[in-house]
Image (tube, rainbow, N blue to C red; front, side):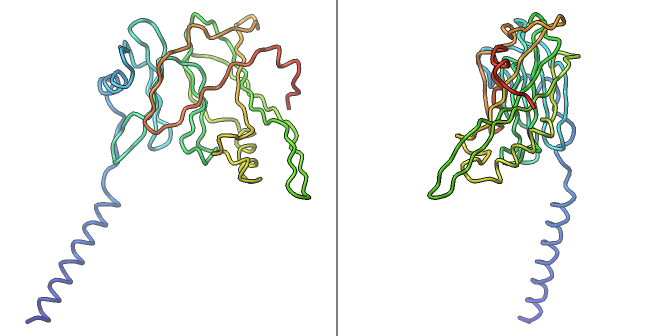
Length: 243
């Protein structure tokens, strides 16, 4: 009798484990992107006093991330990034401005880095030049000496619409990976990393512009890393060698 009960118990355990495995590998994902009403509610909850007039676009990034540029009821441009967490879509970060930012989905993997922005039309931006700069450096460790030359890589983006989300250029990814492979000092997760990202914006006549109307004053993060890309004074370009 004991042997029979043991066999039955083992069979029940096998059935339960099989069901769990089948459910795990065949359970539906988060499905379609959230409704605009749900997106508005979450963003408004994350940004004090902000009221959203319109979700301008809905762009899915990979299987489990999304980018939502939005318009506030007072005419400001903002943006929010979302992620799948515990099987459902949830807000990852939001900002009531649209200044260019570096979205690092996985801060340890440059292949998951994206440039995002949502520009105010009054700033009259026709083109943005993005720059990634590795500072020159010199290190002495015991008898070992090393020199790291400066590198600046440029990426031109024609602004055909006010917002965008795009992977960082290949040269940027290569430089991030190279720095991560050198020493822990140059790890991309190190807050003292020697990489800077910046931008210069231009109007349709090729004149430099400032994103005065695009800037916001509130941001929120729920685990997604979105680093501001700093504005570069065009005069600095005269002192730099761009490769």
